[in-house]
Image (cartoon, rainbow, N blue to C red):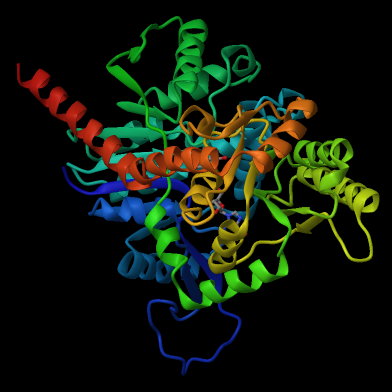
Length: 487
Ligand code: GDG
């Protein structure tokens, strides 16, 4: 197999226009003549890089005028093995904020009421996918494996085949597709006006991966109901057999465990431990997104304190809510709701000495994040839907010392793997408030038992394991196809 061409909406490098015009500055990896570059680190980036021979294609994230496109392309390619996709501001807005995040995202997370179908957004989505496909076809060399990521690019597998056929007609193209969010039940999916087009787009992959078997099942029933194609439990009989499989994503636990040993993190942990001495700490880490069930968490915490007043003053909820998609209206409304709820809980139980909810509407750096994970007694994940949820994995990786407990919504993909967590229905306030209490009152022995189960799982099913599994499966499929062709 040749290189892996990973395609995702955004590149793992942030490109920004340089504000200074200081030509005397030295040009290096982080700086070309007119632009700055910053590599994002994350589980996915390191896992895919570890597979070797990786070229990453994705949207540059900013509008780059024609005269600078060659500069940015050459720089990204030379230093980062990245190929940028350029989109105009208008197309990018309608494709990303519009169709991807205001139609597919709410619908796939069971919010059909918030989906306002718009023909122009659909047009922009189609166009953006076409631009991706054309750039990819130029980049593609026979033997490369194409790996497409996520809901922004559901038309891409079909378009890739069309574009490559135009310029490299004899090339064999192997395509894997992975969906990072849930695939909803077919009764929800069928609401989408372009439901057939989207399915036909992904079905040009050789392998389609999902986090859980429920998502596979939903996908297969949509395919059979809407396209009348024959399916088996592991795929679709199409012009080729399209394999559909379960590949639950994990995290990179070593990155967290090693991070906790850094002197500045050790120091920060000491400081936080002193700050919260004698107080139990609940932690929530979410993008400020309506799927994360932050209002449910705050209401559950409210009920817990109301029913168990002996805990008032003895526990806090630290909620980190990272700003997200602030150009989309639903996210602005959510912010108002969450601010109101935080104010209500703090007004009800707070005092001059004590604040029950510490709410941060911003992101923190990695060191601060892992220090917060490490000093917390319980992590609360209350998503109303979540493809997987990696925060729960990261928390466990940071809990070797404290054996903290995990309250986990049954509507996350993670809940199907993380045996040892306290599973809750985040819509059942009674159950959620009881889980807050239970997590604090479990015996040390039970806490250790839960932690050991979870820690073992998180250490084994890592991002690297996930990436390797998908690539191995793709290689197997490619090999099988080759043999079939020879006979
Ligand atoms: C989508 C799906 C699926 C958060 N705050 C800070 C920060 N984070 C990092 C966490 C974690 C990541 O963001 C969030 O990942 P999740 O998986 O929890 O959620 P989504 O962003 O919604 O991701 C999800 C995932 O794709 C992968 O397939 O699991 O279901 O929705 O890594 O650590 N990182 C730093 N500061 C913060 O303030 N440094």
